[in-house]
Amino acid sequence: MSASAVSASAVSASASLPALAALVTVVLWASAFVGIRALGDTFSPGAMAFLRLLAAVVPLTILLAVVRLRARRTGAQARPLFPRGRALAMVIAYGVAWFAGYTILLNWAERHLDAGTAALLVNLAPILVAVAAGLFLGEGFPRHLVIGMTIAFAGVVLIALGGSATADAHADWLGIVLGVAAAVLYATGVLIQKSALRTVDALTATWLGAVAGLVATAPFAPVAVGELSDAQSGAIWAVIYLGVGPTAIAFSTWAYALARTDASAMAATTLVVPAIVIVLSWALLDELPTGVGIVGGLLCLAGVAIARRLLPRRLRVVRPTRSLDASSPATTPPDPQRVPGPTATEGTPSCASSSPVSRSVDR
Image (tube, rainbow, N blue to C red):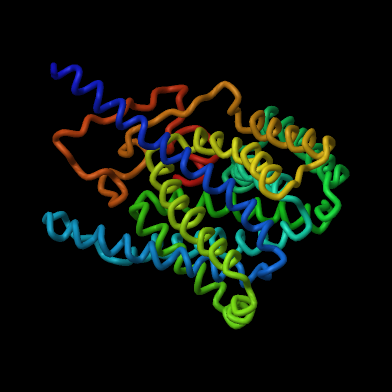
């Protein structure tokens, strides 16, 4: 095989791994909405969050230990177990906001909303990131952002008015507020995590964030123990799945892809989650939003796409060194056999470039 063929193959593999990680993430996260909805009658919001994080921390701890032992045996440069200073504070903050706060609010919201409607609301997060950039980073509110915000808000109103097509699932204003609040914490977590990934590797950030979330939800432990003792085995296995799949695995693959991919493109990939959720919810729970609710959800997603200028874009892979500091532990270790992916060019935002997500996390 020629050198050029080897190089092309290496570039293709480098480009496909983050895309595969993003695909795994969205499928697992979609299944979480359905699992949370199914477990709503068994576990209270705080208890479910605690049990889910407990189930996530165990495999993450084992995986982190294995990776560090392997690195030590191969003579790789040892990294401190915990980041320090500002990096540690950012990881803890994102863990409390995303792993703990977001999870509790989403669990609570799905007591008032069907899984598909909740997923549609949570996917307002990308537009909230853009709003935060306009308010706090001096980026202003360009026309496409204002138009997108208006369309998305109209979608939220339609979701609230649309209700649910099933008798036992409904949409009310409390559920809408909780869903939007969950989206706010989701957006906050993304912003903080992206900044943390400049100096902390993806696995450590995911593990430490989950630990921070577990500590934050520890006050719900007594309630969780009581509810666990009354739960059926199927519900117990389901909450374990929520911890291992949509949390331990999905957050790890998300962090891996986010550290190597255009942040705007990553935001775009999450827009497919509601569609997957609606299909799974219909197949497994016999739940669907009403026609009005679905139209409202489509308006939300269209508003996000317009506000974030995602419609003409596609997933682009950039070199980690473009979005991360060259001395960062999150940067891929030097490898003479590794061929870097294509570089971001002008007009193709990298993680340190022009999108509101990118600028807001590169501070």
